[in-house]
Length: 64
Image 1 (cartoon, rainbow, N blue to C red):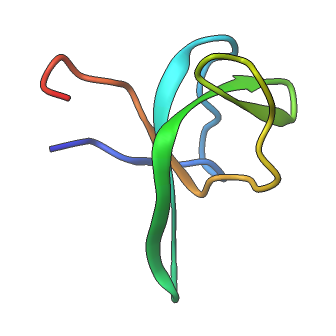
Image 2 (cartoon, helix red, strand yellow):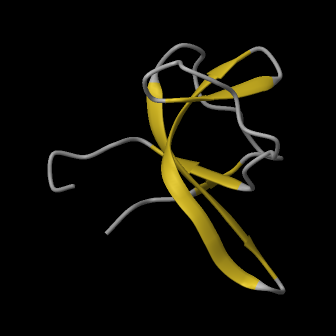
């Protein structure tokens, strides 16, 4: 079970992989590991950034 934090309440640390998702009236989607650098969100291998901003983030636990 993940402890989700709203992006609007607190941003995750930069350059640290975190689990992210979008959760809104349309449901939960785009649940993946991303890395934040300033206002951009990169895939975990840093190969490219995504064209959306997650709504929630969580530290990655050893249970994943």
